Image (cartoon, rainbow, N blue to C red; front, side):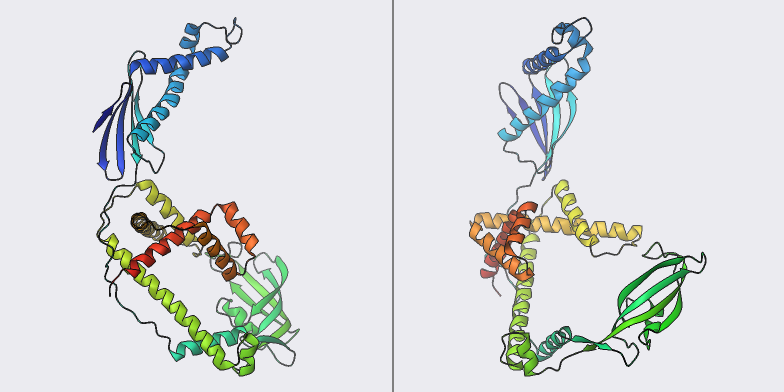
Amino acid sequence: MEESTDKVKTVITAPAMSRRELDIEVPADEASREFEKVLDDYASKAKLDGFRRGKAPREMVKRLFSEDLREAVIESLAPRVLRESLRAENINPVSTPLIRDIRFKSGEPFRFKAVVEIIPEFEVPPYKKIKIEKSAVQVEEAEVDRYLEELRQKSADYAPVADRGVRDGDYTVIEWKGKDLKTKRFLPTEKILVLAGHPDNEKNLNESLVGLLPQETKRFVIAYPPVHPQKKLAGREIEYEIKAISIKEKKVPEMTDEWAKDLGEFDGLAGLRAKVRGELEKAKGEAARREKGEQAIRALAEGVPLDLPESLVEAEAQSILRSWAESLKGGLTAPQIEELKQRAREQAAQNIKRGLILKKIADRERLSVGDEEVEEEIREMAKRNGVPLAQLVARLNEEGRREDIRTALLTRKTIDFLLGNAVS
């Protein structure tokens, strides 16, 4: 394809769905005018020996700064001409264009190539009667019982104990001293709160805590392996001395009407059970809706072959890796890291493809999200997270995340549209 005007010639090729290459030629006279303009600017500022600032001969400036002048012309002319060509061709890059193969000589046309990434055009398959598997939301009595038990455990009190030793499940404040058996150097003395018997504790610590009386001390040794999450302890053999300062025993309330009334505005245990059942049904219903939405989007995505811009995939993959890194504890091998990177890229491509399909459907169906809906969602976010509304609004404004909320709401609305038009 070729487009030309009186000034600039542009030849566009499409080596891939998501990439366009532009061969651009600027006529010699326009390139010369740009060169003269740059030369005038240099000459007006140049200070050469024997001449006042701006009074040096243009030919001398041209000769002494020839390479600088050439670079300045390229830096000013190429981006401007490229912007004009992209606008004329209605090409919208998703990343910074790559300019290369620049050819520029005095008296000749100015030529260069540009590579840009774009969102490729695609057709969305029929989406108004997608087949979705029917699923019933059902909450078993055992699920309600488990939830109530969790509430009971969370509402437990911890009462001081003075007439017995530590048992598993007790919260114990201990004084903790350590000595390196090799260097004989002491570690700083600390007071720490320990949940006796917790699986994350050192095995020797849990064994030493059992039966420990208030103000009683015990010693034990831990030989840390050469590879240990706490690098300052790796490979060291430490003798610890612990002393129980205080012990608190977990007191779990009985599951009675009085306990239920203490948890909120319930008339008793039956009212609490009804509330719990309703919350579980709501959560299961939302999970079922998400799964149906996934089914709908999967069905659409499978019918859309799409070559995605590399820059978008890479940026999304990096974002995914950062989110995963927050839940990883490190210590991954090189092959595991490479596997994670590959999984992130696959997930990124999937996310982008689905997002593009949903946006096209939203545009076609004229779905949108108003400012009032964004404000309502922010109020709900503040309520769910127990955060003051003004504080959340300030943080969202500072981080520029309002549009992210609008996009998420539009995605939800589009999925609801698909599900509303689906068949079972």
